[in-house]
Image 1: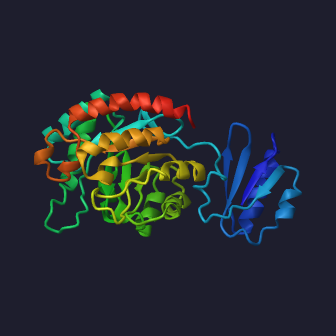
Image 2: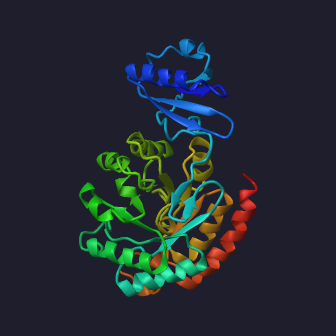
Image 3: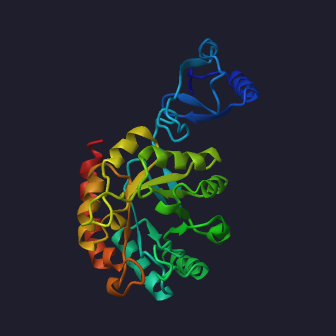
Length: 336
């Protein structure tokens, strides 16, 4: 349920309303917009009398939200959320690029890539320290050492870092990681999502291989229900019957999500295709349909990468792509 409050609503009356709703077992979240203040009611609102609320002097209108996601719903929060990460931001009309290797391998590797992507215009550095792999015999990442190397790259370049967590037990290692990524396989790890809700650190949630957009939004809702509003959604391709690409990139997810939620939406074309030469085209398409940014894999020696080299751009390819993206986004932004 959403209450739209009247302009210059009496503060004492608002506080009294919040206290009364709390006795009814309902939490309140106020969002002050450019034109109006909205109070979202979180919890079981079935016992709340809409006509009683509508009769209050401070209430302009009352609406029920039918969708199961409340905090993530654009009806609750009409203005776009902008997630700030250091000097960078995602959402609000800009286009942020997160770039870096699939997996952190050595200090020289990750620092060199960090410098290259920063020079090309990347806003953040991505790098995997913990790697969920289909095969138990594949490279699983450097784990704690990988986090340390990422932070060295951050110290060298100033780029905020993004890395994937796989389990609650690993969270203490992520204290200085700027954005915690929840991978596709963990999108519905609800205990992990609850724990991330207790943090105030930005969380990037990737859509699962076979999950609907509503399920993705419900995963965001788990984090937001814990009090953490700093969520970035990521479309990274879903599993279909097609075998030519690693996954099928659902670009329709971008405009649909932008309509349904205020949270920023980015695209991962690297995992969607699995083939580096197709990444630029889908990156440009993502910018054209209104994505708030990209997360792209870049490696300085893809042929010898320990993980996902086939889908990684070289720094030279990334630099050319970043230049083209700026022009496409400038045109696409005027269309939305």
